[in-house]
Image (cartoon, rainbow, N blue to C red; front, side, top):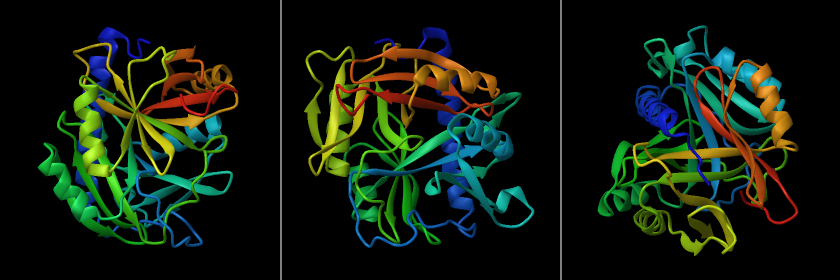
Length: 303
């Protein structure tokens, strides 16, 4: 499947990666910001390999919150003072914390917004994972750091320069279940080298690499842990596009959600398409952040 449109993706991917780098800088500079726990009450258990959180780095938290509230019904709690640079906005889906939003003016490139969602994957040892990343050709963007009630985190890059976050949650991870409606349900890495990326994440995170079903319209692989599929590694269709991680929100109706996104001031970057296991689309919020949506079918649980 052609996931990206040729001319648009190169521009969007460059902006997305700029925002990801911005996020890394934000984390490094905002260790004193209140970072709420990933789970409350505490679970005390961890699920390494599971993507447990996502943060939006944006130049306009209010606009983003208004958009996601209309599209997914998310609600929000903001912590901190009057200065937006010191606040953290918690994202809740039906009362369940699933992510957050932080302000950074650098998420605006001139007149073009370039916000980005950054996924965090649970790991048993943040420092050890950072070391493994460098050993296997990646980089450490933000070294391991304790962030309040969240726990220890780091921002890393894979060999293609794609940033991602790792976390050892202070209170434990959420229960290991398939995301409900309006929660995170999946994440894909779009890369020019599926084998190299799969080998990297297998070595660094500890994933088992599995093939896609023969009938899959996409070319790539799955990353699995504890018997569950956790993410996809997909071949980019446009060689000029930068690699990027794209998280997906589970929805009841992909077309209706895409229509709501347009009505709420966003745009539809990729119209809904049936992949057999799910109907997926890509929407972009008014601050420039792309996010996938996935309507699961009876044929399977992953896009």
